[in-house]
Amino acid sequence: MGNISGNLKYLRKKKGLTQQQFADLMEIKRSLVGAYEEERADPKYDLLKKFAEYYELSMDELVNEKITDKWKPKPKAESGNVRVLSISVDSEERENIELVPVKASAGYLNGYADPEFISDLPRFHLPILKQGTYRAFEIKGDSMLPLQPGSIIVGEYVENWNDIKPGETYVFISKTDGVVYKRAGNRFKENKALKLISDNIAYEPYMISAEDILEVWKAKAYISTSLPEPTPEPTMESLTLLMSQMQKSIAKLQQNNN
Image 1 (cartoon, helix red, strand yellow):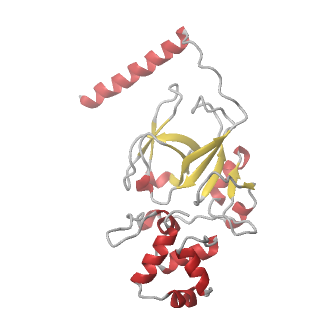
Image 2 (cartoon, one colour):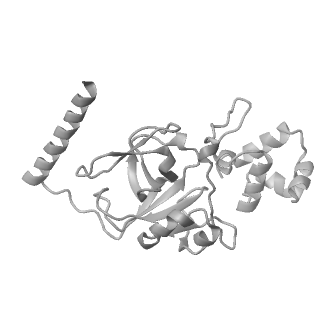
Image 3 (spheres, helix red, strand yellow):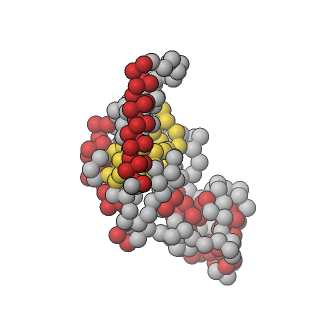
């Protein structure tokens, strides 16, 4: 599971602990520590969380980063942007993927940090996804065509917004727009606006302030009952729309250069 085995062994030795001493601290058997460090078993969610808290790391860092003497943690969000994420787990302590349908999207703005609200959402698992925290969102509207309205985007939680990459797709949860699926137009900078871009050129890009954003989920997969259609031949209407969009973009560039 990621780099967890090597990281646990490195961090334990850096603390000067034997496997037995670490096992006693974590209230588990020494044999389990050996199994985790030798990649013969994976720790369950609650135990993984306990390991991360002990080493003062995020679960993402403990699982996915390769921690060595040269490794440095990524900068965390400023205190004004500290975010609390509520999750649910199944009977085997695996994280669920909670589904936020369109009808629940308005309520999600108030309940996204409420464990009771999250636990009431529909839940499922996707074996193809690696260890991580995921949530699924049903999208509406045609701003991201050819992805059809009603499609479900499965996103991985973005803890550090500095990891947002231009050109990649995310589900953004914001106070003003609610749940939207867009491409990032620029990198995130504290207290700066983020540009959101639709795949449908009929929709203009727009800016959203950092203070307005509640959560960010990086798109990892989508589920749809609408199968892809063949690419249609360009029509006069579509070409006219494309030309209009290009003219607007050129006009903006000229205006910015003046």
